[in-house]
Image 1 (cartoon, one colour):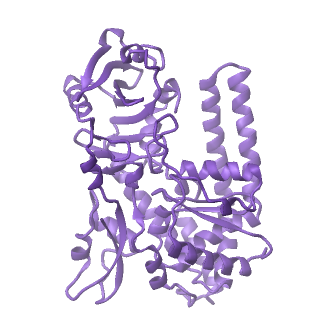
Image 2: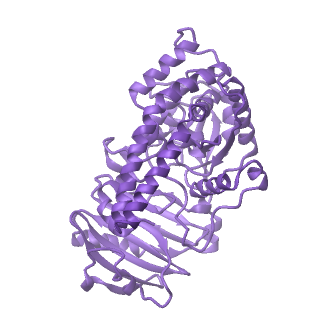
Amino acid sequence: MRHWSTFARALPLLFPLCLSACAGLDLDQASVPLTSPASASEYADMSPNQRREHERLVASYGGAYNDPELKALIQQVVERLVAASERPDLKYRVTVLNSPAINAFALPDGSLYVTRGLLSLANDTSELSSVLAHEMAHVIARHATIREDQVKQAVLVSRVISDVVNDPDLGALAMQKSRRTLASFSRGQELEADAIGVGIAARAGFDPYGASRFLTDMGRFGDLKSAAFSGSSSTTPDMDFLSSHPATPERISIAIANARQYANGAPQGDGERDRNAYFSAIDGMVYGDDPKEGFVRGRKFFHPKLGFTFTAPEGFSLENTSQAVLGATQTGREALRLDAVRVAPDQSLAQYLSSGWVEGVEINTVESLTVNGFTAATAIARGDQWSFRMFAIRFGSDVYRLIFAARELTPELDKQFRAAADTFRRVSSGEAETVKPLRVRIVAAGLGDNLEKVANRMQVPDRPMERFLILNGLDAAAKLKYGEKVKIISE
């Protein structure tokens, strides 16, 4: 959990930027584990340190996503890429992460990770191969090793500041600055990895233009996410893959130039794309939040496994991350955070709110109350730029913190925050059993189908047409052919 004083100071950046979409309300301190242990076979060729790092990464991304057909396709692609790479002697282990985030990354030992969110965005085997080959290129060029050394140094610096200077907040801010530097350093290597990756994919027989197509769709998806949370593209949410793999027009142009070298200058490659095989592998794949780890439907957050639900005020968009449920309005002037902490049973929640974990609490606003039968407390805290209406709700053995932030906490806005807190309630077993995840569904266009008709079948909270076009790599002028297969999102 973020230390609150740092959290409060970082609010102008935190709420619009930390929506990384890693599925699952943070349960490090909660009562129900959400990830299952990996099989022994996954650890067969791992050292103890590699195993610990693997477990940590998989747990932080909602666990591994297991689908035999999808795993088989990815393994086939990897084997072809390895054989065509500059280092066919290297071995790679690919894990699909159960996260809706758009992300892929590599570790120095050849462990490759790709999220199901990224897989849902790709449209054929060449686009999949471009991502995997790019991450393999980081291993071949030892970028991952260099980055790991830089991370270790950044951690050491932050510990010195925290322990020697005795200022944990300053240490945390130093670590944030170091991470930004590391991201910039990594971006400086992206073009090299792109060039190596396109070459590997092309020599393996895949369409070399897969990289440029995927980068284009990734950039469009980033713009859509940004618009959903900020009303403009000026503050792009911190999607991990986009932050270190920016889909800039320059990078896309260079990717196209790289592809032309392997396509004899032709604007289209003749390598494999195999859209049908790829669509078959992702058909039925979970999309967005996994209900087992809590999910968002519009303004409502629902966690069937933990047994509670909550509805945000009008105008809020929600995102379920690995640390908390986060929300913001399009203006960026209001935000919220819902997370879980442990509080001693003998400490009242009013005492907890006044205990100093947050600065600027107005003691005269601390109030004990009940929320749908649960013991709770609320208070107001004020900072230089933000004011907060905070709730602590005891639910089972945990306490849930529901924190609303506003640039200007007016009486009317405070009333809306209180009303939203009153929606926190227990869900019945019957309600939980009715919950179904959204999935990627592959459908064929029928006679008379057009973009609008098919897009209207998307069970998404907003912008169904935009999401449909991006997911399928289409533009608004595209015409659907009878029998053409496309992706939609539905239960």
